[in-house]
Image (cartoon, rainbow, N blue to C red; front, top):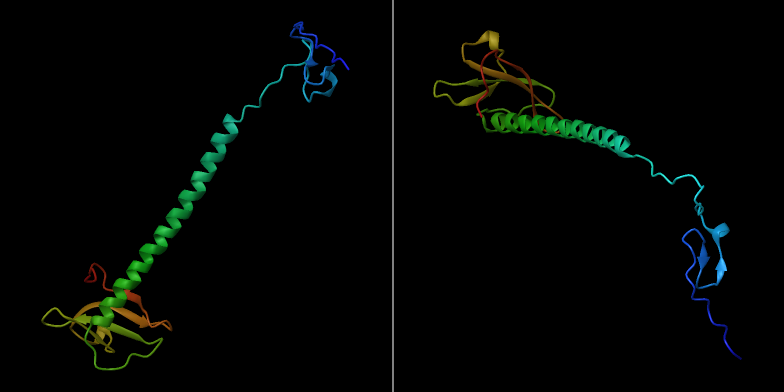
Length: 148
């Protein structure tokens, strides 16, 4: 059987002809194919993208600041915990009780149950032992920076 020779004649651009299937298929295309069809325009996502980027960056910045503040607070707890734990004391501290930190004559910190109003030692601050066995600062002397 003889094969039909394909028509090799070039069709005009406005004619939608599928060479593989040898048929006109303009009606089957998912887009308009004639000259009078409306223009296909891509939506302008530029303003949406920039506003979303701004919102995402703002959200991430806020999250970063919250984590940074939590980190700094954790470092402060660590410093206080090391300061009070390394101070001299000759008793077993009880959870929930407030203790006072002082410097002795040699500028060494020591922990005491004596209230700051009742003694003449160099007062550094007051601390409470938490249930996590961490020292939480409850008061400090105004203008006196705790040693690091």
